[in-house]
Length: 442
Ligand SMILES: Cc1ncc(COP(=O)(O)O)c(C=O)c1O
Figure 1 (tube, rainbow, N blue to C red):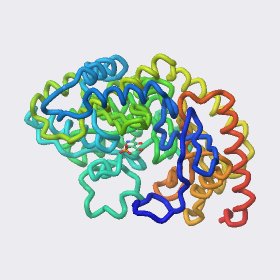
Figure 2: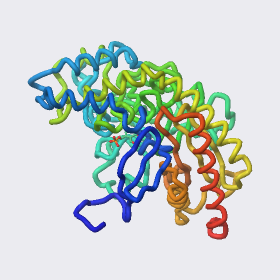
Figure 3: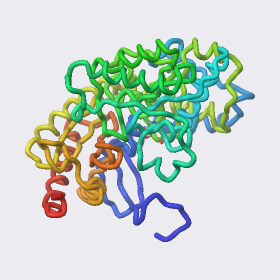
């Protein structure tokens, strides 16, 4: 279809409708949505009560400027959020997506230090991380491929290590790896100048960049201790992990972390509204006072709040956080069984309904494939032919090399649908081996 859309792909099918975990295109082809888009659709497609909540609010009042009015729905949403957020006395600043949430959190961190008379501006991110494509968020991100064209505009953030358990370089692994990462973080802070570092930004479970790498249990306590010692704010980027995705309300909970700032998005609006959230602790909020010079036209949106509130209540009332934990465990177990003998599957990992499958050229050394083979892209396309939607995570080994797909279906997925996902992905991987076997060899 030639048209005037600046499209994100060539020859894309046209979507017709979606319900639950299924998407249907205008040719009548049905797809099992095992990635909820980009791990977005938590409550499932086509939930009438979410649609109705948004429509009702839009009919009552769709838009007022955030500096002129608040709304009852926004106040209620923020109150109900505060009860589930792992942030002390949480204060929520709603925006229009994950990148905006990260930008907002970075400015909050800077504003916090300025309010305390400290000129701190350096942000520490992690290699292979993803925090968004706007320039501030991209600067904190570590994904080399996404950064490459924009390097002249980047370079203020610095980067430290990130755990990749199956590729852990530390000699004593699995013992004490958290302490080693914490040492590297501290060295990064000291190199940047400890009185200049404003914040450390990290995903509780690494998402798009590393395809669901779960940190070792001693990681988060160790890095948080370093941050606290140097007065560096801890920013948990929960855009992908938040709202039940990893089997708890937020990824931080499983790590026992109470961050100073938290960002969320994706499942927060579940695709019904482009919703992002930047959350500050009460202490950070009160310190900033009136000192945050910031704002977006569509922040604090009443329809966004109504949508987010309906999603939050749906997650709670249907206990979808527990469902994510249970279905996620099932998905991991079945995938590990099904792919145990596959010569190209190097690792299956994840937490809750956030699961990564990594392909390697050599299972014993975990040597990645040549990126020129574009195996991730071919696997995603092959899965789609079998009616399965999965999310690509190429570059997961070292930023450039490494093939993987992420699974992150709506949290309403049934046990039978989980089994079907595993069957279709297994068949797509078997086909990939047959059709790319020769090319796949290095
Ligand atoms: C952890 C994380 N942070 C930030 C973002 C950016 O969110 P958005 O694409 O909504 O701007 C993403 C998106 O994938 C993400 O996974």
